[in-house]
Length: 481
Image (cartoon, rainbow, N blue to C red; front, side, top):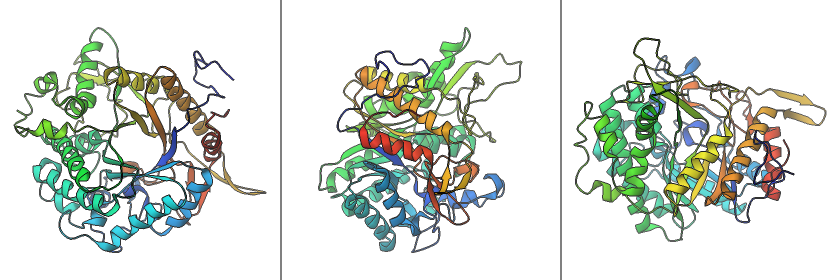
């Protein structure tokens, strides 16, 4: 056992005890796992359209079947119970509820989530529901998607529908997952659905996503009948600088990656420097009087997704510009207004996504958020790693030995524990991902799950990392990897 005040410099601590009430869980997203893309009245989403666009997704993969969770619901819930999960963070497919994003409720789609939530509660697992994890109904995209202000109001109506239907059973409502990705990868770089490449559209989408959050929280509060937590999940960037221009590069990326969301959400205003940095791209006239007041809704917990860090510097304009920001190269840029910034390749080791492994970054992020927003409780809503996995047949059955993932989790849980020891109000940790799934533009080439999915048979096999995690959940103490 190590001293939690110091610990190992590589974050490979064990024996550390988490406080009573700390919520250990795991997370998924609807399009990545559900499949049943055209069953029971579900309408197409932008990811259905995008994944069927030649060249958009590696190997032409689609989420049509994914991990077939729609047809393996009870089995998957039983697996969660076997692992002892306290909570399960899932997302709801908007187009399964409202096939065109507006209008009547698709009762068969709603019934699926009723079964999911009831099944979780029957097994003693807290439901954490995310209303939006990137799968906008295609009909709304045809009207402009997140560049159209009306999409925010449609989202609020969808939130009201879900709040009325499940508002007596959900433990935590999360409005949006990673609006940075929805806006910048979807409308700026084109690496994600809907595949647009316009900086002005990306910034417009940023605001309308922020607005959608505020409107949705307002509607949810009107209709829920229990006492849930309200939340949003952000993929906040841990940015380090290099060279004389490093601080300026950090300021720009921190503005676009973090403060353009944290500002209106938690302070009720957009950062003036971000507006200035992007003035040549847009005049921000899409921000109307009263919008920031709508966005600035009190939330009970801020969801934090963390995977890696970024190293930035000002580009000299002559040498080949590095773009190692951790995202798939695409036609456009996910950093509008930051043309002078380059993302420097960092030292390894890396996950299978090419992301550097840096548990210290998680501790740094949690502590910095706590210092800036001391009254805001936090939850790690995603953290995990993709590594190549091999299913092996052993005498006592199938197994997946994934020591790199187990090591990754041990080190990042250590980082979380160190943040707690430094006074951070951290409420829980949701491992990404519960099962292998469709990894967006990378298709089925990357495996994040602690449960292995054979995509030919859809058979599930808990990996060694899942068995390690089950020990942590059962005891609240970090086991040796």
